[in-house]
Amino acid sequence: MPANRFYFIYGNDDYLVSEKVKSILKECIKNPTDADIQLERIDGAVDKVEAAQTAIRKCLSAMNALGLFCEEKTILLENATFFGDNRTGQSTTVQDEVARLTEKIKAGMPPGVTLIITATEIDKRRAFFKACGKAGEVHEFKIPEDKYASDHTAVMQRLDHLLGEKQLKMSTVVKEAFQQKVGLETRLILNELEKLAVAIGPRTTVAMDDIAMFVSASREAEFFDLADAFADRDLPKTLRILRQLIFQRQNLMGLVINLERRIRDLIIYREAIDRRWITRKSAGSRDAYTWATLTPEVEQAFSQEMDNDPRRMHPVRISILAGQAAGFSRKRLDYCQRQITQAHEQMVSSRVPPELIMEIVLVRMLSAAKRPAASAARTAPATSGR
Image 1 (cartoon, rainbow, N blue to C red):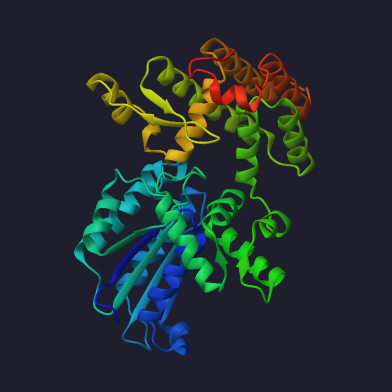
Image 2 (spheres, rainbow, N blue to C red; image 1 turned 30 degrees about the vertical axis):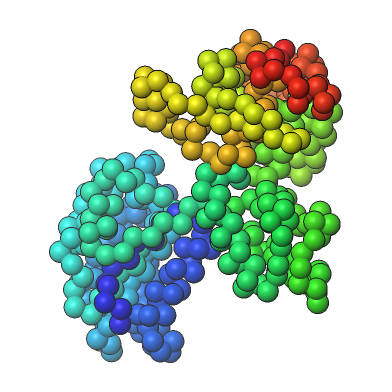
C-alpha cells in the first residue's frame, strides 16, 4: 500500500485525471482480482441536491466500515460535481454534508482505508479544498483556456511525452501547427496521434502535409480560427469559416461569446498601444510586441483587478493580439462591441435565424475595416487603423 491514504484529483482534462486514478489504484490494489472486493466506487456526477447528499453519505458510510472479506478498502468518489461554485454546491444541505466529509478527512483515514476523490471543478475558497491539501495529495489537470497557453513550455513538453508514447517525431514547426489545430485536450491529442501513426506508417516522422491531410481541427481551434479571421479583418475568410461551422452544426451562441471575448481583448490591446504600455519592434514577417514597465496604478489594475492578466500570455499570442488591435481604431472596436452585444441579445430574444444574425453582424463589423496589404501592415505605425 502507498504511504498516503487520501488523494484529491480535479480538473477538466478527463484523460489525465483518469490516468492518475489508474496509477493510484494500481498502487492500492496490487492484485487486480481483488478489485471487486477491495474497491468501492461512488458516482459523484449528480445535478440534484438529494443525489449529492446521497453520494456524500455513501462515501462517509464506506469510510466507517471495512468489508467482511478484506482488511484494506479503497473508496473512489468519482466525477464529483458538488465541490464547485454551482447551484448544487451552493445548497446549504450539500454544504452541510461536505462539512461532515471535510471533518472526516481532517481526522485522517481510518486504518486500512484509502479515499480517492475526483472532481471537474473545485471552489478553492472553501474549507474542503484546504483540508484536502493538508490531508494528502492534491493533483490538478486543467486544459488551458487559450491554445497559445501562457505555460507554452509545459504544453510542448506534454506533447513530446505523448509523441514518445506513440513513437512519432515532429519538428518544432510541425508541433506548433499540430497543437494549434488540435487544441489542448489530452484525449483529443492522443486520438489524433493514433490516427497519424496509422496513416503515415511505417514512417515515424510527421510532416506538415500530414497535419493538413490527416489531423482534424477541434471545435475550440475552429472557434479561434473564426476569431482570428475576424481580428485580421478578412471578411471573406470569416464568412467562409462561419458557414463551415454552421454546416457542422456548431453552437452559434458559443461563437458569439467567443467573438465578444476577442473584441474585449482587442480593446485592451488597443488601449495599451495608445497609452504606450506596449512596444513594437520589427521581427521578420510579423512585428513583435512586448509589454513595457507600467506605473504602480496600472500594474495594480492588471495584476489584481483583471481576471486574466494579458501580460501572462505566451509572447507569440501577445504579438498576434497587439498586431490585430493595431489594425482597428478604438472607435471602431467600440462599434464592434456594441454590434456583437446586440447580436447576442437578438439570438436570445428574436425569431430571426441565428446564422443570419451572425452573418449580418460580421458584415457590419468588417465591411468598413478593409484588410491592408501585407507590406503595408508591416510598415504601418502601431497606432494606425480605421
